[in-house]
Length: 561
Image (cartoon, rainbow, N blue to C red):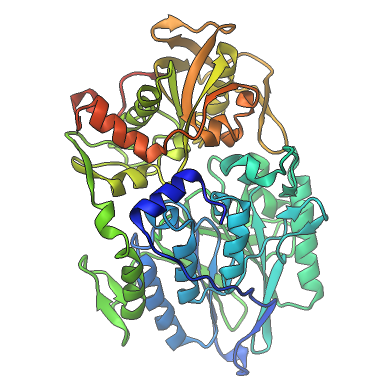
């Protein structure tokens, strides 16, 4: 397995267990029973952006219960996932995705596509997991550039009696910058994997259209696009809206990536309405799409599973779940639960990644007290002038009370390793500008800071230029980032500063931060980000996170005009 050093350390420390591995790909065509599908509805259950949240929302055990309930109503029930399952919490980090694949197999998913975070444990590891996932992964635009062929099949046809449905997969080209760019490259830094990316979206539209046309040529009755594309905060020409607006022949689209919740209709290239839906994140809801006997396609989002069925049990929180699946999940969680509850400190304040007034995620477009804590940990523990962290790397808040290993892993679930580079003031300014380019929309590359303050003038339109893979190229106009101060002094664009962050951004140029590609690496793979938080709380704060972090909106390091 292609494990990061930090992950190996965590697994050795917390697990000490071996994991059985099984391999099989799903077939291209799966047949239901031979009954006449004209007499029954086709029910398609769908999830997206689970991010290891198997106990969140309706839960995987709740999904299993609902799946059985639907199977009582129809012989034609299909379970689909639209990407970003295996990463996002200790469950995924400690097993490098293994436990989530086991759960998907237990649920008997019929179709799945890779989201950008399926690649977070490295390409070698992902391809191992793809062999273990019994239904297989599908994607029409995940390309092996050395052969010019798709890595996986583009689509899968499922036959429901005399009705056939083609499920076509598509993965966001933002995977380059929203996973780790190096995972898609060879040892010489050349891209050997791609996603039909270009600066207009036309290459993506053409690839999707070709796959839809190929499926239609096989005589299918319906085409469902299963996408990890998204809308809010996504590159405009790679959104699900844009793909649908530039293609034909798609009857409905199950989407993911942007963590939104909706069922709506958008127009395709012929002006026809296409159903588009997304379920949010961490099982906030289950999607239920129905193809009625008369051909009507509809969808709804299920936020609470009915308390019905022979397999029904209740969790301690009163949720209706399937007993067998609940026991399966608990058996996995119990293997490391005790160690994860080890206390590493105490917080006198709530530390947040969200706006306490609205509940909306804030860390990808503004400062928060939790982001201040994380970047302080980088700067102080690694002894640098400046600490940086991408907002997308901070995934969960911490409540008042004991802080445990579990809490730290929920905040920083990627297993990134700390490193220090020497960067010029110009490189740092460009990084801040790159992070601020989407404001007021979210950006996973939005930079949280320590040892530095800056202002974003949102009245200035961003002129950041990126390449087809989303990597920084230049700023062609006025900078919207102004008033940058390092330790209270104006930044010197020609001077060099020591910058502490993680390998994802400073070494692998994640979030498109290619300005650091030539930076001098002073220290690499020093300590995992989780251990850095632990060390900062214990050594620098004396074990207690106090009033200096009380303001949820931070300490005034980032100003928005």
